[in-house]
Amino acid sequence: MVQPGVSWSSRLKDISINLLLTLVSLALTMLVLEICFRLMGIQGEFHQPQKDNLQISSFPKFQRPLPFGFYPYSRMRSTYDSNPRGYFDSTNSIEHRFNAVGWRDSEHSLDKPSGTFRILGLGDSFLFGQGVKQPDVCLKKLETLLAEDLPEKNIETINAGNSGLNTNDQLNLLKARGLQYHPDLVIVHFVLNDVEIDKWTLPRPGPDFSPPDWLSGKSHLWGWSRQRLGRFIYGRSYVRDYLSAFNKDSPEWKRCQSSIREIEKLCNQHNVQLLFVLFPFFVELDGSYPFQQAHDTVHHFCKSMEIDILDLRNHYSNFSGPELWVHPTDQHPNELAHDIAAQAIAQHLRKSMR
Image 1 (tube, rainbow, N blue to C red):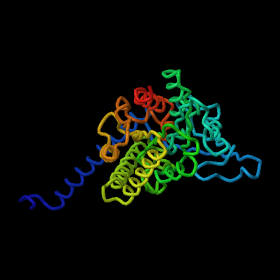
Image 2: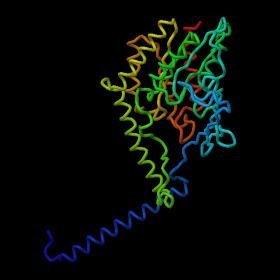
Image 3: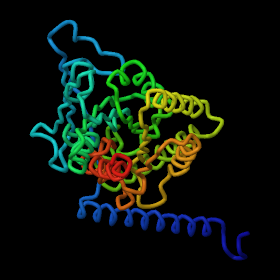
Image 4: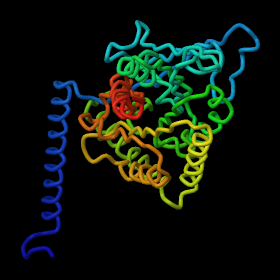
């Protein structure tokens, strides 16, 4: 209600002045923040995704991928848009080489040499070692560690990890090819996205790969704020989708459990030890890790099956996550994360292998 003696026009004028002062204050605040962001070098980090260049063998019979493997004798170079840790070569690249069966490993005979303790690794791109030099991959480092600890044993590891394989793929690989190598121990390197879920349709948290809009190129404050908001929205969706995938009534988790049971059954039938290694996603490891519920679900299931399981989540608790990434655009584990995993697995195996 307008006070007596105060006209509507006078009241409207006061409102307009207050609104103008508010807008001016907001604009000045934004200007001060923009200046601070520029002085501190804070802005949105818009990266280009890695580029993979495949070089296939010139021999026609090697020019097609093998089941559960890559192109035999091929090479793939993954090139990133920067080299912040100085780990890549001069072209910001890592080369991945594949053997006769399309695995990223040296050659292995089907016949196991006498006195050899053979370890077969099953997994996806984490075990494959995307963005990491082959000597730094956790399974290769594990071979070195166990050889040093157990000089009386001839330790041999076989890396059958490949990008995109889920648990059912790993089961089929074990049946079709893995058991032919007569392993003494099978290590399943399990990542939460190995549940029977379409990995390629899930949102990806982390840096914004989309090109910056016009205003992001002009304002450090806007570019930074826009990217953080995008990460928050995508991150929440990512967590929600994975936690729902491990719900007890989830068809994805039911199929995954069936595959794990079959792997355990095959190992028992062939008198092969089985170790299930659970990798975390490298986000918020030192705080409220958003995927702990899924870890608990997997751990409980393995224990109910009497499957030996090693959860690596606590081994990374001194890190927030991004410092363990291959690159700001690639959340695969870097060489430090692989080394921590190898150390933890070696410690877990020492007693049972003596």
